[in-house]
Length: 400
Ligand SMILES: *Cc1c(COP(=O)(O)O)cnc(C)c1O
Picture 1 (cartoon, rainbow, N blue to C red):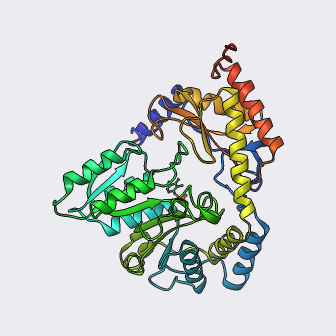
Picture 2 (picture 1 turned 135 degrees about the vertical axis):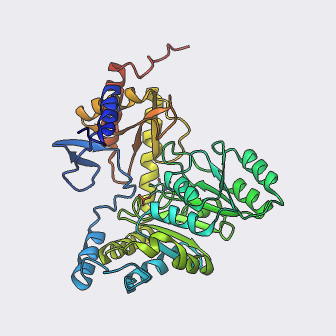
Picture 3 (picture 1 turned 90 degrees about the vertical axis):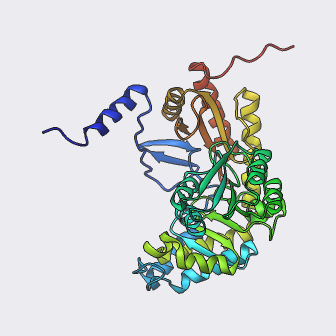
């Protein structure tokens, strides 16, 4: 008998031969600036723990306290009996933080995007989507069965042209973009996109997963960063990155949120967060509001690290945020670079096709507020040494 799943093993072998087979590195400590993975202490530039909250004592205490008082599980989906008071408290906290009428929390940012796009649009509608939008937006768009129009990355004129062509056509239009793009670290042209959406009567939606806790006052995201309050109808954020915990949320009008309570499938058909998660998230927002120095430290480290990388001669693409890719070309090179860096004490993920286009493979680095200058200097020293050895780094240009 042949195994009907044997094609999977064949594919895995092909990946092994291509040098793109991935093993999961095991984190054996808390997520820290220097963490132990697979038995090795490494500088961790591979997490989304921007503000160092994933292991913050106040979040840990909040989670423990909620667990002791309320248990480890909510017992049901939100629409049956799994809406705990602490879930509502978190939603109200986020709504106030973002200066919007209402907020709904999902189990993850992925569920927030996929659940929202597929709930508010149907087969007669149109989605105008940046080419580099996150997979959860793409999946939500497909699930909605709406017509998907992809525009080239950050190309506002193309988005406007698509919407012009749809003027007068039946169906609703949704213009959607990541606020900060997760693989390149560049920022969406939100003011221009919002103006285009307004001109054509389209719904404007932003996915601020990597902007939450990073951009805007106290980390309120791209809407606050660009002063677009009241003009973007659907704001998605994540609780899994800068907030340090787990979850996603949608902010907008009371009607939008009530509608999602009725129709967003992950909300209706998947159990709500444990109380510990909600409690830790509430503590995270308190810290973001009360300790702006964390975000300042994140940006100080970001500027310092980018400047050091640039003077060493690395190509960091279009990045404008703490996400700094180092472009190397082929996926195989990126993965080999990442493995060699790890051996020398630095963890930065290799990313290749299909996550990024062919030929644009990179390692991705993310500095956090809690890395020290010494750690960042050591990281660059390792990057330079390994890149020279592997001929990734161009030889320094002779002085003119
Ligand atoms: C990480 C990410 C998500 C998913 O968030 P999770 O909370 O990890 O599920 C969604 N959108 C973007 C742009 C992301 O980078």
